[in-house]
Image 1: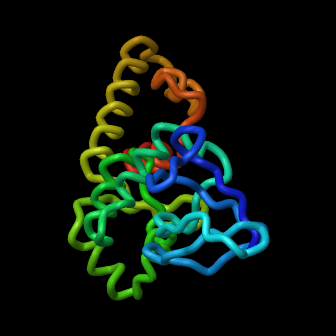
Image 2: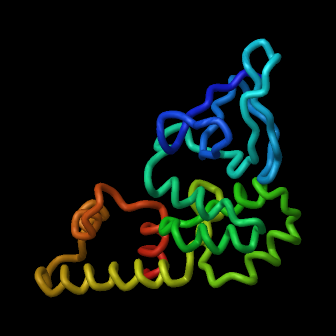
Image 3: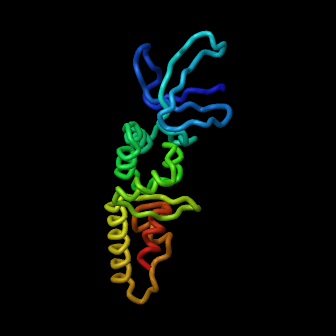
Amino acid sequence: VNARVALLEGKMIAPGSTARAQLVTDRPLCVVRGDRFILRDQSAQHTIAGGIVLDPFGPARGRAKPARLAQLSAMEQPTPEQTLQGLLDVQTDGVPLDSFARAWNLTPEEKGALLQRHALTVFSDAGEARGIAARHWQSMREQLLACLRAWHHEQPDSLGPTEAMLAARLDMHTLSPAWRAAMKALC
């Protein structure tokens, strides 16, 4: 399979050193977290590098942003339990639970048992279950309630803010699916 290497930190990798990179392949691959790979030159004569898959569903854009690098740090943990906890800590918009289970090759029973061991709230985003840490969920609810209280205090005759107005009060361009789910849970 042909692939392009997108370095996530720095411009080059010195011989014998390690770095995070995303492989952009010319066709989809069937890999899971922990699979090992070898990179060879175009002629397949020389080994260039090797590595371990952290995220088989890496994003096409924003792969080197600080939030993404924090996700990758969480994904370096050795077990699904530790990885999920790390992701719940850093992903304030929730973790796609079905993708997480596929990435770790978890059975439905393993996934269910894993989710029961974590303090999280599950909501749906475009048909996929997402899990968000209970503390992030509670923080969002408190911020929404504070915004709504302020709105009604300032405009007591109003029915309430539109979603766009609420997003502006929260210093966001638009409300993310997690924020929408938290808002819906308040109703």
